Image (cartoon, rainbow, N blue to C red; front, side):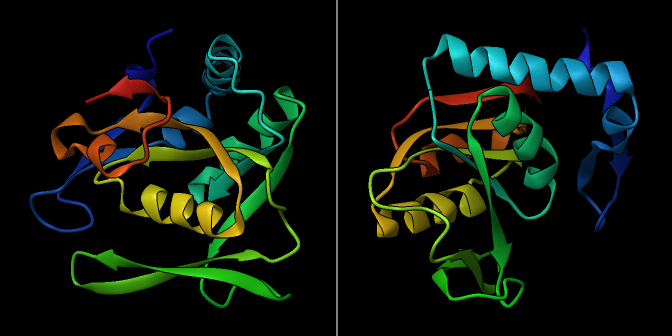
Length: 172
């Protein structure tokens, strides 16, 4: 299946000069969505990831992470922006283009030694994925890999991630 054909390009969003890769057109296509989850799961199985948990980053990582966790017979744990989780949290601050942001995960979500796969819809510069990996390292988890639907290769986000397997289904 040609996943690129199901991803809409929106020029000048969210600001002039940016070409936004819109996955809502992929999500609404039932065959495309099923294929995406099945294909990502198969790549994880082929690489022998066998995670205990899939961690999805807010918010589009939730969309792909939860059904992927189901397919891999793993639990799902959300990583949220600051202030979105109701119980005690682990936090990590990370750099943005202009300023900083913070990611959080419930303290009781994972334990030392948990095998974790990080999933998101897209890798650009790798900043959010790298921060999520730092959060997992802080907890003492074992990162088994990353899974992305889209990779923007020109931004070289892979260079900012730990040395573990990285899956991307569509490259631009």
